[in-house]
Length: 477
Ligand code: GDG
Image 1 (cartoon, rainbow, N blue to C red):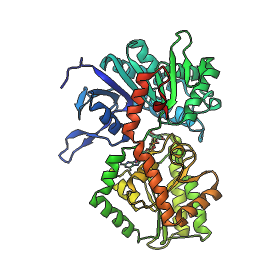
Image 2 (cartoon, protein in one colour):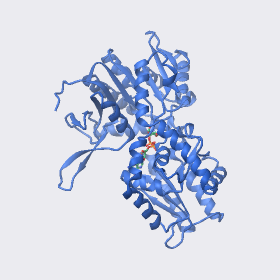
Image 3 (tube, rainbow, N blue to C red):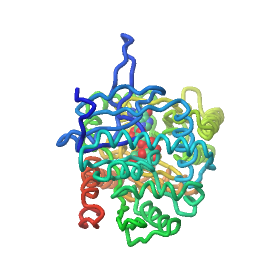
Image 4 (cartoon, rainbow, N blue to C red):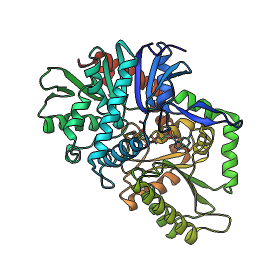
């Protein structure tokens, strides 16, 4: 176990540590690596240099002592129950999340939430400053930690600081609603390099700096008032661990499970699938509406066609999420009540979280994958689906309002607000000849294989090293 003084050349700061505490059958608790693209990506970059990860361990109150897990030094940051309520559920998920996702639901503004956000960001910055080696690279993740770049710079002017936004960055007209808009921009401008999912997001950020701070900007560079320091903001779309996930999907037991899932659903001609956190951004209600209309118009129905909707529990203490859950469950009940048959429900609704193997099997079992968000930074489910389809089967219906659509143009594109259009797209995804669908799937898979999460992390860090100078074109392609 390294001493508390040990420092690291690469430091990740994210709201959550990449581990979950689990209680084993024998009643003991242990840490288990939480699956996720970010962790896999970091493993690939930390293989050549040991790194540290600063984040919340998931329980309120005192934080566990720092520890090492699979070659990564984990530095837990404590959060009190009030801070989880105000910084996390409040400011992060009920103020910033709606503003950054087109205000699909109204945002709540509370000054005490903001105050908690500042306090927690300061705590993260101090933890980062403690574990970062001289001249280290510090990579801050996501909207919960937007003040951390400037706070770290103040404590440790020697380190290089990057920030990556996993969600969209809103147009200035929406961002300007935030009472703390200039503080958030100043916080981010503490970084050397800011990464976004789409070019539109980085452009929105640069425009916000120009219009709300009066900053000088030139293409993707923002000059920080008073310091002449330049910050670069560019698109760097995240991806999935293509090789690792494809390998999982090729395992015989996963493939057997896919067949078993289809059999247990009565071997439908068309199995449709939705997999989302139960979040209002994901367009679940719009998807259900289109599906319900197709059923009631007699275009198709169970048992020949059926829909499995996995809705992973999410943010259950935030009002908008409780309301959404009620609406979705009422709609599913209505669809099944009116349009289902004995032994053949029209929608199989699952409010659970599943192991990765089960997700890979579900992806393989599905003929049509419905990814219909109203707004989504990237949407990894879309990329995971095509990764799992090594058999070239299946069809991806993909909303134009996801970051993924900007890379996966060959997918069956939809505007989820246009219910009639969405219905037509679903029918097209079903009826397009298999050979054409295979050609599409091959192209989608090639894109994800060539732009996997390991490449994303490597490109990000190269851009961070090159900032603030405009990197060579190969870094921004
Ligand atoms: C944010 C941005 C951006 C879901 N249910 C289960 C499960 N999942 C996994 C999926 C996927 C991940 O969770 C969800 O990622 P998404 O990208 O779809 O969406 P967000 O959670 O909103 O993520 C998003 C992402 O950050 C990365 O930058 O793409 O736009 O909003 O990997 O497979 N995994 C398992 N069981 C489940 O039940 N094992």
